[in-house]
Image (cartoon, rainbow, N blue to C red; front, side, top):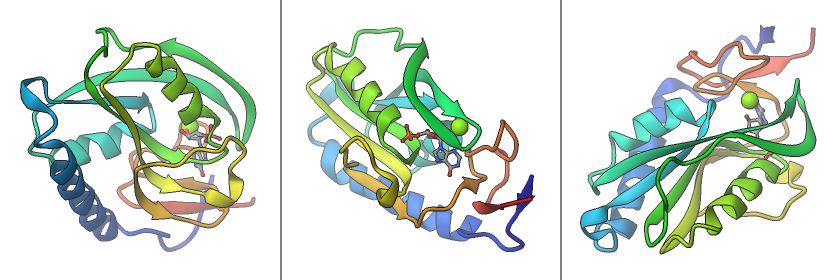
Length: 177
Ligand code: IMP
Ligand code: MG
C-alpha cells in the first residue's frame, strides 16, 4: 500500500470539522430527542473512528447500534450489499442518525437506510465523514457531511485499503503501485 506523502486531510482539520458536526447535531436533536435520546447506527468498520470522535462532541443523550455491510472488493464496489450484523434493539419511534465513513456510489448507505426504515424510526438521517459526489450511482444525500472530496481512493481515520491503514490519524490518498 503506497500512500500520498502528505495527507489529503490533516488530523487537525478532521478534529475541527468533527467538533463542528457535533454542534450541528446538538442544534438539531437536543430538543427533539427527549429522554430516549438519539441513536447512532454506525456502519462498521469504517464508521467506527469517526463515530467515536463525533460522539464525544455531542451533548444530546446518545446510544449506539451497529450494522455491518459487505459490498466492496478492493477498490471497486460490486454493487451487492449483504448485512452481517444488524441493530440489536428495535429502532421504532427513535431518532436515528446513520454514521458512515464515506459515501461513494451510495449503495451501502442506501441499503442501510432501507433496512432501518422497516423499523419505522421517528426520524432517519445520514452523517458521512466524506462524500465523493462524482461517484454516486444510487441517489442519496447525507444531512451532515464532513468533507466533500474528488474521486480519490482514500485511507486513514477508519478508511482502509484491504483492511490496512484504518488506524492512521490523518486521511491519505492511495497511490498506484
Ligand atoms: P458505496 O456503497 O459505494 O457508497 O461505498 C461505501 C463503502 O465503500 C464505504 O463505507 C467504504 O467502506 C468503502 N469505500 C468507498 N470509497 C472508499 C475509499 O476511498 N477508501 C476506503 N474505502 C472506501
Ligand atoms: Mg471498507
